[in-house]
Image (cartoon, rainbow, N blue to C red; front, side):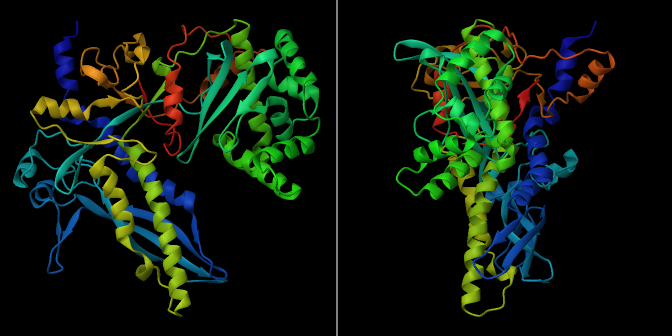
Length: 527
């Protein structure tokens, strides 16, 4: 029989304690930075036929520039003692394109990136205990935090509802219980809350950002390109009882063609404007703000209509008692934002600001008839300040506060506990009784006893001792192929019967609507 103490001792080592932080930050260095650059692609200017093409990005090692201009390797203890930031230069390859002419690629320093201790860009990486002692570092220190202006700052893991996942539940509206399906659609750091609800007389309505009130479901589906009654019914369900509900919606339909539907939406989003502008604005709003995770192109309309159909089906299944309300406290409906995800959000917003500054500096240089050179127009302080300030204050992009905190150094165990902390975005002022309770799915993932007393109780949690963070999305292609090889045929219906327990607090979604603007990515889930 395996001795649990031996297993626990072997697992709870320096390498494992903050593995989730260092691996996430390494992933950000390897893929996240380049992903943001590729999203930007180019920096357009108002100069005729002139733009900047962006290339490879890389991170150097932490260095310090002395007063005499000399550069030396910077170690964490030096940064602590001298009250400076432990950061490394960011190099970006840029090319100025003027008409058909393309200048030579130039690698410019665009700013300083705070470096996590013991990540792959840290000067302590792969050092032996004796070498770490030689540079004034404790060999038992786990790393996983940053040093900004001489202070140790840890980026706390954020617990969030899973993006791009349909959650169906009941809500009280005007004294009546109605069925609601919600999804936080997330793309490139932008989050859009899309809500499909079945109100009075079984009429389905949809709400999403940039449009006031709620739109008729049939109107929106037709605007997306599904026009005939038969196609609309098939996009939702083949179930006879659900089709009855849909026929009621079709009888109450406001429009009957795609053109009429777009005009109807245009009159809502651009009231009082010309017809041409209303149509243009309606198409822009649908492409940009409706389910952005499915794409921002007009060609994604049918896909968005089918997704909305699945959300409507979830409402009908809830009304017919074929599925239970989704439990928002179930850990399968949660995702964890680790330091790499949060730094990617921060870098995306900061780099957008730098791109605007480069555009301005290039136009300014052109007006003065100067030779355009990216090295001279890049102001590295613009990016450096916007990366360091949120880490120093904890005020993150998207309006979140307390994301970065001063590392607790009361004793060694306190530091380890702080590095393994998880915080919820819910308001401390509200009761949220169910959110604060222990949930059975937290078994083996979240420590049942380590939580503060008072208003933070149950909202500030810690990992269980031997928890492992999963960062890969499960690939179902092998499973599908196996089922196909076994000659298992799919059932021609969208109907799914779920049994995940009763629904819980309705306020979590509302609490997240306030800051559902920037926070990015798939996030990570607990294994």
